[in-house]
Image (tube, rainbow, N blue to C red):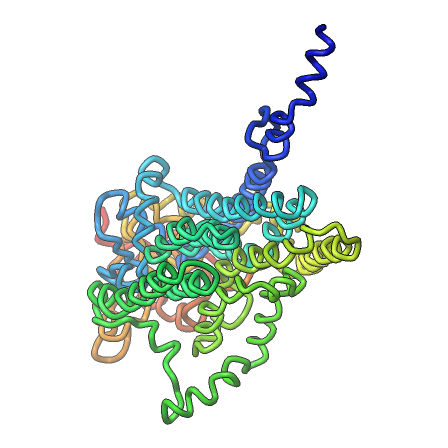
Length: 506
């Protein structure tokens, strides 16, 4: 009788329904998406932490963001002395989301707090992508998507260049775009709306999400989302940022302003301008190459247009290439588009469709592997990343001589080593017209308690920014003038590093 009962339970149609629909499952191992998130977090935080320990991080931008987050943690306005005296960072870009890090920084007042937060945010982006890939394409495909996303050059470039508010956009976009791909429209909007608090240009990405929703789903919701995105960007750039800016304007608007003689000429030549110089088309190719160009088959890829558009039309050459953090917000979009484009092939048992699915994922993984040596994750395989040079040890020794609470004028690469415990400005000063220049066009004399300068450029990616933003000869001239004219005394000079102390100090 017991045997019959067991057979009856096994053949119960309700148990088969539960098994097929997945409504009731026994506890299993950690979902693969969270395993990947944990592994990627360790990868990202290791690389960024080692770069900082080796003096490869910079005041522009890790030091600036730490000053803003430190101010938030103390319930002050996000003033960043590295940008200029009394410079409110909300007058530079609109990113109030940084205040979220204030409580964490209060508990861990260190630049490593920001680097760990960025690593966690970037790793979190893999969760919705891998989960969708697992459900739509299968577990092996989910591993391929997770690897290709996690090791992509866009993510690597952001990890290897300090900290940026764009890290908050990555998980928000990943959840929003995957929700849209699964026709969960309200969820997509809910994840997309906080983008307005991350950076002013992301309102245009939100508008693109709204256009997709209007095209594929509820029209009214889509149009409302488009309106929210456009109005959010206009409000930030025309009202909020100028209100916090000492110049009373949105400074970065000039980067995408037309240089042609007329609006008609600007519009007519925009397609060509977006592809010149050669750096621009190379970047466009690489953005979609990480998915073996399969992402282009999905309309979700259109969400990348706003970011690519303003970057390619910008007059700032930093925006055109693959360096820095500018491509990181594109990675969740193109990989969500990859999953969306391959989903129809996974719904059929036709052998050619299954073969195409496997080949597309293999190609995406192959592209990622081919590009790895050319981008920052390759630094982890270099011996220099795991050894501390004499120059770094000397710098640490001199930095320890500066007391907590002091005001310090520091070289770009030394600034983030001090921002958690000192008031730091950039040596000699950052040129903000009308703010720091005197009548002769020179920066004012240094008034900091200490000056620490490093004349040795760093071997770092993406650029050796050791002398940025001034030529070495000007920095050396300002350093000599500090001793000759401004009453600074030499404390130490070793291995290309110079530490000066103002004589007014006891």
